[in-house]
Image (cartoon, rainbow, N blue to C red; front, side, top):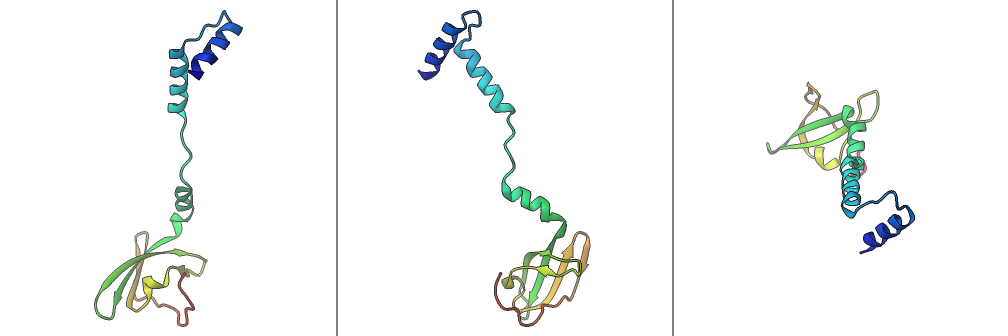
Length: 114
């Protein structure tokens, strides 16, 4: 109803440029179809950290296996991950791209969960 009122007013003020409701709806649909929504914030974060992501494979003392992820945080290759990923691990392997680093160590005295 509001659209019809706007059309009436537009056609009254600009009689040479008659616009129909169908033309307005079509223009709105075309504009909305061509609008590309911005990527979610999480997608932007992933694009930024993706080159430094690592897969962490662990084997616990009882033989149970687990997976986690981490992020390389400096030039020395230090990796930030959650403590629960590596806590109690007997063996740790880091997968970085096509490279696999076996028998990695967890520093002693880690104060808390990230």
